[in-house]
Structures are given as structure tokens and as C-alpha cells.
View (cartoon, rainbow, N blue to C red):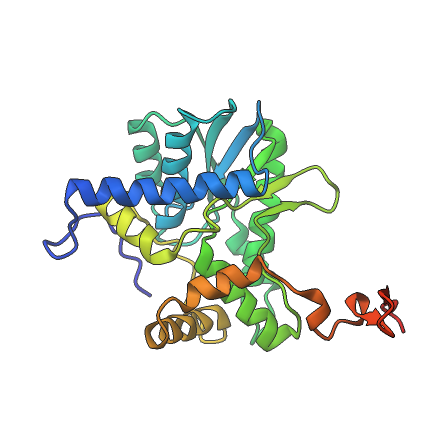
Length: 280
């Protein structure tokens, strides 16, 4: 598996002029700000814990939130948190060095869930979902320990669309990652401020900014049984064939006409506006 550490060094073809980088940053920041407002993600006095894996998405999220923090109408704190799950080859040292150099408030956690996964993972099953659940539990615990009122994750628009496809194709339901999620015990709030930003924009921005993009080193990401990369390739293929398809799909997630689906809970009965119960 390729565990190359990408240090944000750009080739001549990949480099962007300063004005283009500024325009890209403004565009991303504007949509992050809109998402925060649309879904009431950050309130006055919040302590926002940003999960920083070292990937392009989490670096972009952290950097943009810091930019917005300086001019936001509400006051909030930021703390970057990195979780080393014990995957061989994971370069947490590069992540910590960058956080320290840039003056971020941060916390480095070590939680060897890789060992747990090797014990609990059944043959033939994908490890991504188990890895995600274990990491989420660690984030909740750290939020309590660090006094964080919000947990910010770096999922972007493409992640939402891929999750939608996975849900429809393999779970038989219409759902995706919510932009704001309250945990079952109502003790934690997870937010996804990049929900209006596309992966290609994040990739170009991360390259231009020279973030130390580090591979998560998980052996499960490239597992053939993991359907998420396959759905991502399908989505990208469709976007190439039908430009702006992603824009249309993302807009559709915000315009759900529940009375024009097959869920009987939302269908009028006999045209009188009454709805059937889920069990009928």
C-alpha cells in the first residue's frame, strides 16, 4: 500500500497564481460560512474540536475555520485534535510539527484501535465501518475531556453524495451524512462545515497552501470489499459525462418532496391530507 507523505509541493502544472488561490479560498470560506449559518453549526461561546487526520479535507477545514473565526459575528474557540489509531507508517509527527509551527491549539491522542480491529474484524468484512465507529467513540470521549461543545469533521459534498449512492444502492434507503448531528444521548454535536464544498476544490486548495497531507495509513481504505471508493469513481465518471451533475444532486438533498416518494408515512390518504402510519 502506498503510504507516501505528500508535503504539498506543487509541480509547475499544479501551481496556482496568488490571485487564483485567494479567489478559491474566498469561495470555499463563503460556502463554509453559509453552511454554518444554514444549519446553526456554531454558536456564541462554542469550543469547536476539529478532527485533524492529516488529510487534505481536515487541513482545509481547520484553516478555513480559523479564517472565519477572525471575522465571525459570534465568538468561538478552536482546538485541533489528532487521533493516532496505531496504523503502521502513520506520520503523526509531521502533523504535530505543522500544528505547532502555525500556532494552533491542539491535542495529540493515541488510541490503538488498529489492534482492536484485528481482533474483532470478521473474515471477509470491510474494516471501514468498524474503524469509523471506534474513531467516533474516541472523538466523543475527547470532546468530554477537552470541554468541546462541537465536533467538526472534514466530510465534503462529494462524501455526502457518495453516501447517498451507497444508501440507495446497498441499504435500500434515502439518506446521507447530516450537516449537523446530535448524538443519541444528546451530549455531543457533530458538524460538517464543508458540506457545500467539493473535493476537487479542496484538493486544489490544499496543494496550493502546501498543507502536509499525510496518508491515514489504514489498510482498509484500499480493500476491494470497500464499496465507497467504487461509488466515488462512479460519481466522478457521471460528473465527467454530465457536467454539474454533482451540483444538481447536492441541490436535491435540500429539496426533498416527501409526498412524491414511496414512504407511506408521508403520503396523504384519500387526498384528504391524512397520513398513514408506518405500520399500515
